[in-house]
Length: 212
Image (cartoon, rainbow, N blue to C red; front, side, top):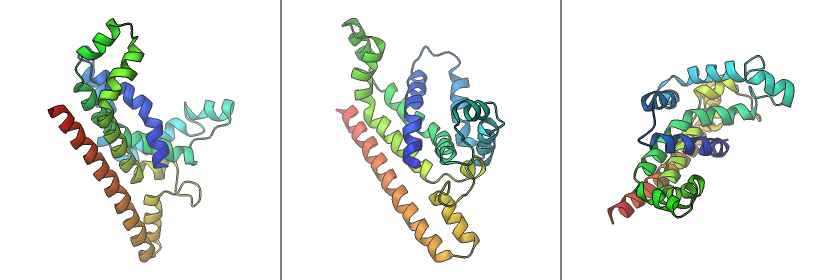
């Protein structure tokens, strides 16, 4: 589910990060505020908002269910969605920093050589910023891995369907199966630590490249 959430947020995250890195963007403060809300709001508030939007009676969930037969709330899709929403700001912040460090003259030169804006982005800007983007993706994965509050509201804690590592750990503690909970906690720590080490390594390599 954490990998799915990371994959879901990459494309919109790249678009928002690229826009925030543009000096000509109007209403930058408003966009930054909206983007950062999942990072500062209580996760349960984020989950409630998603439930109201994507529940069967919600403005987005109703047409999905009635016209496409796709149900979001209390399915694995809700787990992916909730994890992606709470991890989104971390990805955008890292990717934005990477795009801001790209010399704006380079994509401009590419466009004068006949590259369109999309080709200039994929052939010049993204290759130069890829380490920061990858570091943001790893951080987003780590955040999605530990997501709890939003997930339990919009997806529930259904074993075999929507129960994540964090929810399983919580359930084991509730029923007094502390040994199993400890094992899950160790797995969570190892996975998250590995993701953080990888993210830091990517950032250090990017900094060394920029210093040359």
